[in-house]
Length: 483
Ligand code: 5AD
Ligand code: SF4
Image (cartoon, rainbow, N blue to C red; front, side, top):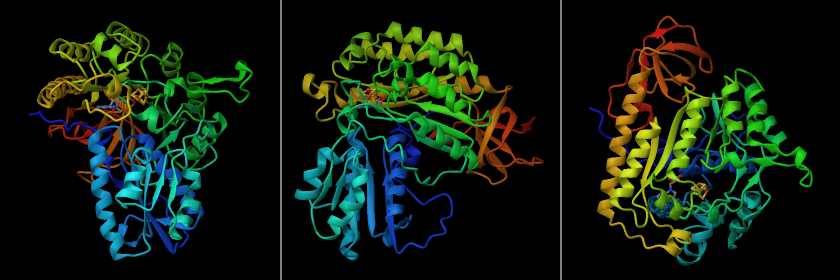
């Protein structure tokens, strides 16, 4: 029976992941750093920038926290639960610090600004606090902290994109990598803390993005995911006075796709108001741009959407779904959904369920509303939907999504897909695991096949996985036929 899908905080399987470089590093490091990351993919990509900065200072990455002289936790503020997890981890690190005097503990990322005085001064949980735009100052901050000084930089920037820093790829499979193309967010969705923690939107230099993707391809990577809080508003203008030179997201997508037909291109996240038909036509024109769009709806009620400041209505969103399906019929669509936002009625909730039906999402990340300090919603509206109702509505949303995913996965049986092999399946080294263009996981037997990780193979789907769906890997298409 397919009944459980864990409520996802971004990619649940990756939360709290610690890092070791993927490629073997010939250098011997006397000093080691340990970094644990939470939250969205942007945060994971930022940890790779931090690793690069620390590497240059002579620190090597370790996955064993006990041998680290620097311990970092890259934090997320988006929901209350993430904050609680971080606090718990910091208390554990404090104990470790007592055993190994001289170890420094730092908080990076989105929680830095809000909790700086609490963590550093009041609770003395950490030695270093660094916001997402201040990672270049880490070497100095580490030095200051080692001298016993207060070490803090949470300044947000209008320019910082870390364009010139080559991220050290950590914990990857050597096949797919994330490439950050912009930072910050100018939308003011009333529930969201991101505009406050990550600052204003800025786009990264197009050349540095193309160089990074080209280098990845030459190193053997076969998939890049272009990352940003709102990728569709990417706009890079090297001569800010001359709009003729501005590069739009559709143009960037095309440039990356042209690196090689063997390099798959994905992107995340799209705001429905910003994804243009140019982007959709570019996706349709290039086989290697993956046919998968993450298009968070948040709510299906126009009244709630207005309070969320999403700037579209239910009908407008549904029209966007129609447009996607008309231009790219095989495209999968995924979503983020919030249950129980301020003032949400039963009727509003039913509208969310019906927009899910209309959009036929292949996968959704589903949350109940959690009020975040400093957001527009916190200042303007009462968080007035009782917790038990929020949870019940979330459960209904999860059940709806399970049914939609089941239909979508069943529909795939009998079809043949081009699959990029990610590596050995977690369940058995006799099987490969890979993904199709729609980002669905495909597991197939290695029997009589001479394929390697990072290669493409056409696979005919014979069945969908029967296990209970707890995480993305459980939602798999299984095949015995390789064509
Ligand atoms: N409460 C619940 N979910 C939230 N999200 C963002 N802020 C909140 C909040 N305060 C969800 C949104 C967003 C995803 C990354 O996290 O659905 O798209
Ligand atoms: Fe938050 Fe909205 Fe920006 Fe997404 S688009 S990061 S939900 S403010």
